[in-house]
Length: 209
Image (cartoon, rainbow, N blue to C red; front, top):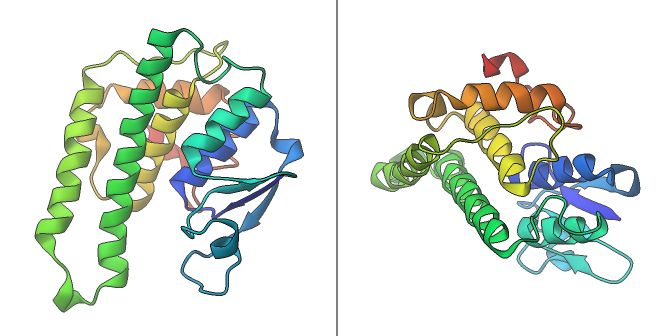
């Protein structure tokens, strides 16, 4: 399998981390994709021109949510996505929130990166930050733990990727909203396969303190 991704992408990292957790990484070749480059073949592989995209023998699978479902299937089912209907729905909802935070954070980054100073819309940026704050405030009300012998589910994998991405791009400081999740991150980082090798480039794990 070929995974089209980029080192800084939180969506791509979520997929790579899931592959490490499930022991699938040795079956995957990661190929860099530049979604801004009009000549990058990602636009042929995924007509939306977005990453991650997983190229298998029979199809191209996108987006990250669908790839996670596929990896869970390859792992035997019920591994990173619970099979019990209620637990499954809770897990999918929590991860939808994670993905929403990633989307909002990425829009903040894009506003600063691709618009000239005189065209930036601060109210739009603040609208995205408000989404992140509200989601983090809700996360703060939940008891999310990780212990060394657990198989993490996609909502835990996604949350770790979210908090690291917020540290990486710094649209806001997540510790202002859910400081007790530092413990979750420390436990997750210490035990989950692939955590450190999938970190965004240059991000220091000491930020977990």
